[in-house]
Structures are given as structure tokens and as C-alpha cells.
Image 1 (cartoon, rainbow, N blue to C red):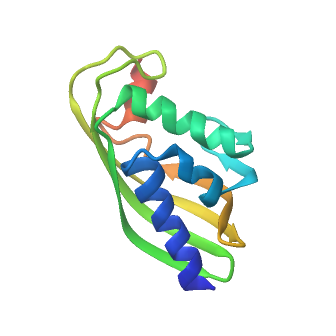
Image 2 (cartoon, rainbow, N blue to C red):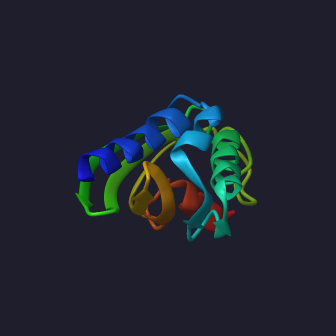
Length: 138
């Protein structure tokens, strides 16, 4: 089960964030997903995740994410990730800077029946140049 859960999280990064394939959300995200994110907000349901992805894509259209490590135990997966992009659109009240940004964080996932049921993100929101730092200055 742990290997399957890790594969689901990797597919989430690849299909939804990097390959911009929103149709994959139905296969990867549970309909009753619990979405918790300190900057992008909290929500319930698949659409909460898709709204956050859409917001990030609008501000950082060239954004790419990579998973540095995945650790799985039972139905829980922890991902240490990094993302890069260029601030080309408004983000949380901050005007586009045109500057490249890089940020990292950890997200805790719960996976059931090969779908993500819970997403708890902990981005490094204090890193200079991160989107979250930009939003705090905005």
C-alpha cells in the first residue's frame, strides 16, 4: 500500500501541477478531500485543491514542482517538495514582479483507495522570494 500511496502523490505533482491536466483530478483527488494550506486557504472537496492550483498557475504560469523525498507509512505520505516559477501575475494582492521564485515545503497526505483524501501543506512562507513571502509584502 505504501508504494501505491507514494505513486498517487507523485502523480498528483506530475499530472495536476506540472502537466496541467485538471481532468486527472477526478482520478487522483477524493471528492471529499480535506484541503489545508496556510496561505491558499482551507477547504473541503476536490474543487478547493483545483482553485488553489488555478490561483498559483495564474500568478506563476511556468511553475514546476519536484518531489525531493517521499516517506509513506500506512495511508499517510509525507512529501518534501520544491517549486520554481516566475511571478507573472497578481498573487494575494502583490503585483507581478517578473522575478523568478523558488520555494520548498512539506505536505502531509492521506491516501485511501488510490486517491488523496487529505492534504496539509507546510510551505516555507518566510523564504525570501517565495510566493508566500511576496504575498506577505503585497
